[in-house]
Length: 275
Image 1 (cartoon, helix red, strand yellow):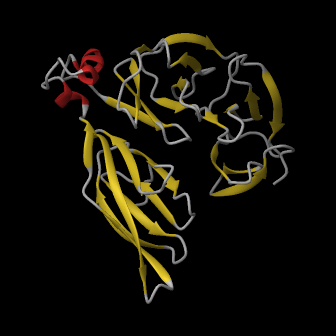
Image 2 (cartoon, rainbow, N blue to C red):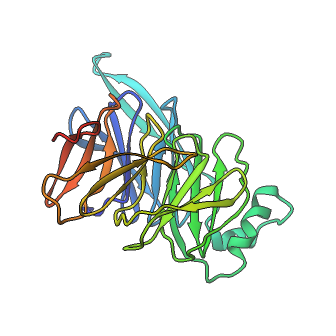
């Protein structure tokens, strides 16, 4: 399936998991081939756990945990990976309304699931693998993947916001919508709206996993914002302005990133903008 919703790389770098319209795929990066696959809801986000023993997905079918076991093969010279059945940690929103409202997690979800008109919009995992935030119908909520406890419900200033991004530490949420100026920022500990950045970024907001900076991008270049103070730290102009770019991922060295380009992706030094 050529449509990719999200992907993540295993802590060892050996495995990659990607989500598509109705499936997840586990790839062996050393052989560039799919070794396992499973079913998942639409628009699913995905993230490996920090210990690499499982990955989580969140899509229209809810939040699931997929256990993964690595074992030696070929006399110990290579590795194989097997993925177990997905455990449902949180149901999809329409199903949530039918469950016991006395359960604390479901209590928090009921404002999102009052109506069967619920439309799942998007989910985003924090870079530390500890949280997932999900948005839809003008609301958002963050769930701790260890305790499974929720944060206060966030009421979005723009109900149609469907592009969301969770900070690496899980404390902040940035939301926007196609071609809307400036992402809205929310404190996920309190559920409060913090501010709307004065920026005309057209690409979805993204967080630097190593520094926690928020990145916005448009047709001119990229801007880096300091979390908490939300002060503009620096700007990187595109070498050929005119088309909107977006940061697709970051290398483990904390210095380079992959940036979308017409028909390709390019590696960029995020400190000086060199390609």
